[in-house]
Amino acid sequence: MSAFTDEIARRRTFAIISHPDAGKTTITEKLLLFGGAIQMAGAVKAKRDGKAATSDFLEVEQARGISVSSAVMSFEYRDCAVNLLDTPGHADFSEDTYRVLTAVDSALMVLDNAKGVEARTQSLMDVCRLRDTPVVTFSNKLDREGLDPFELMDNVEESLGIQCVPLTWPIGMGKRFEGIYDLVNKRVVFYEPAAKGRRNEVVTLTDLNSKDLDGWVGTLLANKLREDVELLGALDPFNPELFMTGQQTPVFFGSAVNNFGVRELLDQFIDIAPPPQARATTTRTVQPDEEGFTGFVFKIQANLDPKHHDRMAFVRITSGKYERKMKMQHVRKGKEMAVNNATTFLARDRVVAEEAYPGDIIGLHNHGGLKIGDTLTTGEDLKFTGIPAFAPELFRRVRLLDPLKSKALVKGLEQLSEEGAAQFFRPLEGSDYILGALGVLQFDVIASRLENEYKVRAAFESVPLQAARWVTGPGAELEKLKTEQKRRLYTDVADNLAYIAQSEWAVNYAAEQYPKLSFHKTMEI
Image (cartoon, rainbow, N blue to C red; front, side, top):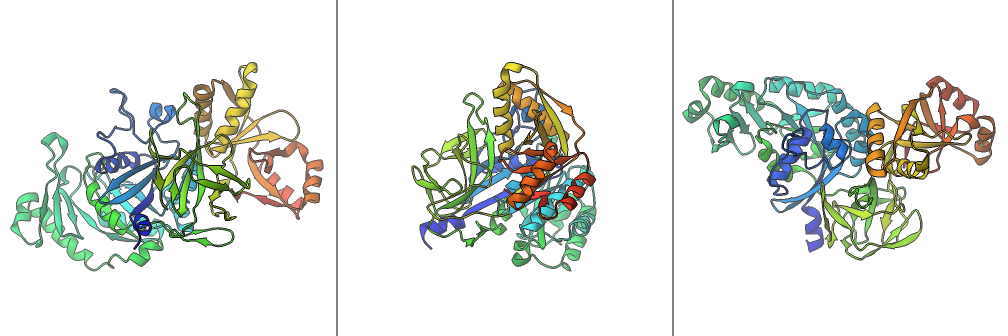
């Protein structure tokens, strides 16, 4: 293989997904710790000593102890270049997560061992299934009482319709949690809680019938492990093809907060997770080993550095090699752009990238020219598919509290809308600005960010609106709609026409009245 294909083969780009409070941000920090990317993992809510999660870089995230925006982190591990994307766990910020899932090659699903599959996990897996994304499962919080591991796997299989294949297995749980058995390498990793010194010793036991096992964990748990492993022998083995098509998930067990079982997860994840995969466009499929550079913008983040009011476009490289000072074609605008200072990320920390390869995520300083869904190439006219936008379900009228800050308000709403924090609509008739979102918490975050980053105070007032659709169709029919329904029509930040009404029934009725037009609840960006 050439040096170029070697670099592609050693990339692993994945997202971490979970229901809130399953331990997603904690396991992110521990993976970074093993990768040498950080020296100390900051507890997500450790406010007493000023620490905040490395992946939570927005002020509102650090204050509330939640993730509301995806963070990109890169590190080296066992000669692999790992690109990890920590996604928001809260359902109110699902749109950001859905877009991130278009930019990765696999996903790590974190489950709370006591709760199994929860609602948010279900919806995220539905998105993964749309793209046949390979999914690895980590059952977290084994240091607490929870579901029997067989029961947990049954729950996953029944709820998500995916076959489970355990690659590690717990020895006890809660106060009786003694460690895990590595089913691949035939070894036991013993666990002690931090209060007792936490030895986390690794002992290779090629024969589980050895009395050494009884000496470590006691006869009762040793016999239970032997019985469990015998039962596991009846299950189907790990099948890379089924894993790659999203039909089978390897399962790992551990406790992220105690840093236990995470190294075994990372070691085997590196071995089985796919390198960069092909990506579909409207005209053809792009292979990662093609020489021509291609990439797409899947996220815009405003004010990564509030002091400079910067805006960053996150670009997933899909083929070719990025080199500093190279020129790219901005396909939507049909213009060439020189890129002198693309960056790679470790949450708050940014490093100027001299080069980057397929699978890597680079950040481009953006002054409004790049939008989510834009394609960058070395000349070819391409448009990547599959980056979604969802019609909002909640609406608020924006009221400016300082009349002298109207320009700053519009700028803030436009920029935050472009990065996907919410959706900003201007009416065709009247002067009310409308903000649309998928969850109530989004409005709180927008208000906080407007005040902290744009120095604008705004209130969000309830409006009698409950449903929105984007409208497309023949020009003459659109003009007819604008004439007859002007008071219900708005344009979003990308100038797409939207119909916003008081109920789902009203939207559906409008669709019946204008059969030549299409009313979209979702659309590709």
